[in-house]
Amino acid sequence: MTAMLHALVSDVADELRAALPVSSSVANDDDNSELIAELSTAGLLDQPQLIELLLRQAGEEQIASAVKARSGRREGRVLQALVSDDDPSISAAAMALILARGRRRDRFGQTRLEFDDLPAEVAVALAFATSAALRRRLTVTVDPQTADRQLAAATAALLARHDEDRRFEVMTAALVRLLDENGKLDEDLIAAAADEGEIALVAQALARRAGVLGADAMDLLVGGNSRGLMLLLRMAAVSREFAARLLAGPGDLLGVTDAGREISRFDTLTHEEVDVAREWLRLDAAYRSALAALGQGHGQRSL
Image (cartoon, rainbow, N blue to C red; front, side):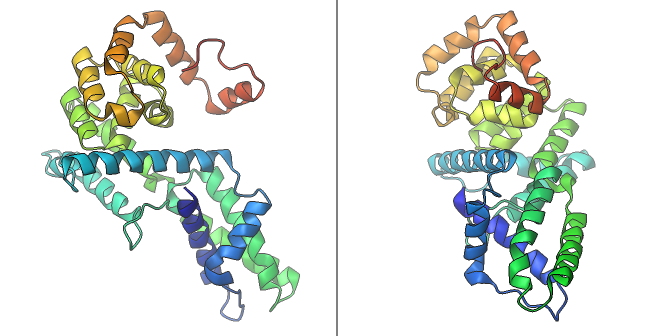
């Protein structure tokens, strides 16, 4: 997470520097380490949405790596098969997702978070925070007012290029929607994706079937809470066979310590429990966060 965050902030800082007039000079701060330390000390990197996004991607990467290590296969077959789909829209969406995944790797093969992967409000906050951290460095060569104008223009240019449609989560959801609309989002495909560690695809598929947000489905899928995972599967109305296959496959990587107990939980969760969980997750995320901060929760057992 720390490496991803530092790489992200460095990318933003470098983009801002590149947009400044040639006559301006901003020190590189030894690969931006000093700038990042200043932002961290000031609490400007402590953005809940950003931290949640980093946690999700780190969890997704850990599971994918573990699954690939077990199978001995580095390349997944599910997305490759979808690239060859007869429907050109599905084929294009699958190829776009493969390319997007490639952009999530640095030159050393390590996972990274792209600026386009950020929700708009997080992108705005991070861009302006980084811009503010550059101001003192810029005033070495220009007066403060000129620095403000130049940094404002650079930040506006960066944000104008930010495209939420290029978010990996959005692109995955778009592929899942196309599969669903074409009657191809079946349990065999979702199970095959799980077997290959395609956790983002599995989360979005279950989210669509359950009628909840993809981010919430991902949290339930990789959050290490077995009850939450079983609730997600029941909300998605998957078969018992699918649940058993998931538990027998990457289940331990999803926090399941006793597959037998969890399949029993899957069987015994009541319709009321499932409906209450679904209704809670359909509330606005900001409202749920505020309730949690106020110590009110959702009035039921933890998901």
